[in-house]
Structures are given as C-alpha cells and as structure tokens.
Picture: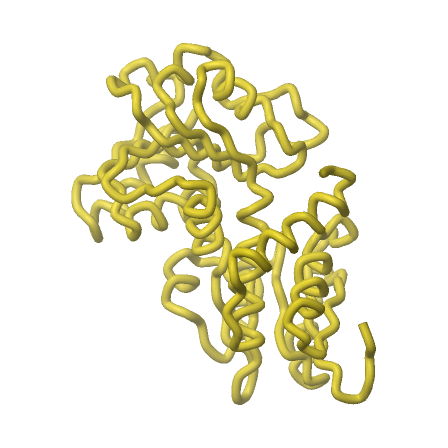
Length: 288
C-alpha cells in the first residue's frame, strides 16, 4: 500500500474497536481493485458520535463503517438514510454525499449474500430465527423481504418475539409466528433453515447454545450462526451431529464489508475476489 496525497481514507468507528477484522477486508479489497484507499479503525466514545461524524466529513473521509454500540446513535447526524436502514433502525455503512453522509445497512444484504454463496436460499422456505433482539428483528425483516414461506421466531421472552412478528404481519401478512423458546417441540416439520441470531456461544462462552436438545436439531437441514468467533460454535456442532449443514457468520462479515466497499468504490467485487479476501480473514484469525 502506497499512501500519497491522493489516498482516500476509509474507516470503522465503534467501541471497543481493537478486535475488528474490517481493515483486513477493505485494505485487501483496495489491493485487489487498485483503489488508492486506506482503511483504519477509530475508537469513538458514545458521547463523541456527533463530533466524529462531523469531523470525518470535514476531513474528507470517503466512508465509514459503524459497529457497536453506534449503529443507531449515528442516525440523527446523517444527511440521508437508505429505506432499508431506516426500517431496520440501524446503520453500519456511511457514504459521503453532498453535505454529509448517507447511511446504509449492509449487514442484512451481507447475510443474504453470504447464505447464497453457501447454497442457502430462503425463498419459499420455512425458517426458524433464534432470538428476538435487534439482530433477530433485522434478520426476520430480511427473510420476509426475501420471500420466506414462513418465519418462526423463538425467544425466551415471547413478548419480544411477538412484537417483531406483529410488525412484519402488518406489512407482509400472516407469515410469522412468535413462539416461546421452550415450545420448539411444537414445530412439526423436519426441513427448516435455522438462523441463530443471538450472541450465545460467542467467545469466550463457547460451550453454550440457545437450545441444547438434539431433538430440535433433527428438524433442521441447514443452520446458520451469526457468530464467527469461534468458527465452530456449539450450535454448529449440534447441527452437524444431527446431519444438518452448518455455517458460521464470518462470510456475513465479509459480504457486509464487500457491499460497503462497492458503495464507496462504485465497483462490483467478484466471487473469486471475495474468496481471496475471505482467505486473508481466516489467516488473520490464525485459521486456514
């Protein structure tokens, strides 16, 4: 990487930020495409979000990723916001525009692109979502927009699952069912896609899963965990023991970054180049 007077700066804001893999994604993409970009992590305290956004624009920073805990906090300071990001209520990508930044959510399109790269298609499928937090809500919206036949949201607190279901039903009709987590035995099928949309099983609590019962995993043919550290979660192990395909969330991280990069650069990233960056991500994590 050669930095000169024409180099455009990109970055990610969050707190904490030291663990981020995003520089691996974007600096390798810049090397592949030949773009004169440099991508850096910026630790931003919650009280400084407004100043960070305004300062970044004043410095001519081309674009930013936004990670926890600022994905909603940045919204009041944007010049514009994409309809999907507005609906989800979270922004993870800022693109410089006239007078400020426009906010996008590439997390959910990134999840869809990652799943498709692994041969998972949700259209006309029955899908189980584990959890009812902000990520699970966004996942359920993505599934409803992508033509899922029916969505089952399982959560310990059913009122949270019901709030998400009611929101989607108003827009899409009776395609969502909210269920208590303990009622999974009432699911009658055996060909479900399951998306694990909580942080359960994330390092260092790697021996945990939202559901431990092997009978639940017998209902699943494909399991997708949004967690990517560790690369094999307990959820994934339980899926494999039930002969279901299982996938971790590192490709979601990859593709949300690729979509952001495509916004910033105006270029399309090929699947071959995506896989090159994916290999670099694994290498950075000490994996092959």
